[in-house]
Length: 323
Image (cartoon, rainbow, N blue to C red; front, side):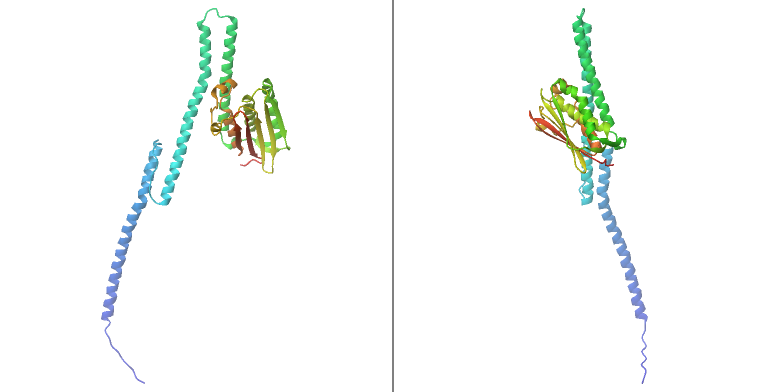
């Protein structure tokens, strides 16, 4: 057995350790600086489209609705830009509809007043007017006042229907009885033109609805079917249901609706034939009122029509009210 003793200087090891520490520190500092530069560069790239988006939104809030938001960037930013453009288009459409509605309301309210003024001025400008002429003009004035009153009542109905669903007075209603009551009120109008009103009920239906609003909707549909019908025609109202919905169908033998007009008939003040609408006392609001009332019940309404062959409106409403 023996022993081997080796003696060596550690100076070189400590020198190497110091050198490695210095290089590691330099590498760390260089990496941090490089990371900061890259992060600053990429953050600028990321923030730039967001700043452009913010600028575009600022223009929109200032009222420049004619400018589109166009930001070419990452997929997510582009999706936000596209969503804003869709929202902008909807705002434009709503603004256009609002302006058109205000214009139509002004025109519709002004027209009967103009007629009343013309009739009154005609009487005042003449001397020794015969009693018969006075009576004729007063009847015309009364008709125009009644027309003005109907427009105002329909506008008030629309305002009430534009409120939120929290204003719905929901209760269990026998839909069969509700339809019978509506038809009973409208039979005198149909009788004047010798139009037959037929009600078909396939089963008893009890549903959770707002009785006043639903009556208003169905009344407008049936009244339109009577007004725009032919002499000695017919109007058929049917009621059916399944486990989830009840269905009301209103069919008539009337003049029908042109295919190109069917997409617009639910718009406020829209008339297929303005001259005929005025002759029947229509305001162009009835179908809009009906659609609003049905939508407040989370229902749907569809129209099927052909000119000179009649029209059918189909209404579908949930039996149980959906909150």
